[in-house]
Length: 140
Ligand code: RB5
Image (tube, rainbow, N blue to C red):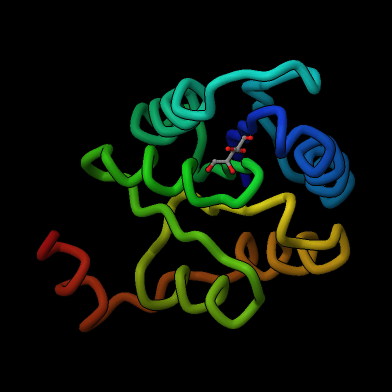
């Protein structure tokens, strides 16, 4: 799968871990930054990742900030982006099956690395179920 990934300073360490994890699993990762712990503004990176998804440069996106909240708010302002903020694997799976989420948001200050990696794994491996769920996502 081709994924775009972005973070702010609060999500930088986890983003680096996720990039390695995804590449080792055979995914193609477009790393749109940030590239250090220097303080940056998360809406800028949300914009970069959402544009990559909307222009089909990538099939899906991952956004990481301290809580995941700012990234999910910024991402969901884009028509066509369905961003899901997930703290465990159940909602990660359902966000793909039922909501066809095309952006996963994570809170690096909320999650441990092990849980985060399980969420990412489930999210990239789960397909949209379609059917009645397609009708519902077409309503917004
Ligand atoms: C940055 O300190 C922090 O506000 C940001 O990473 C994020 O949690 C915002 O929602």
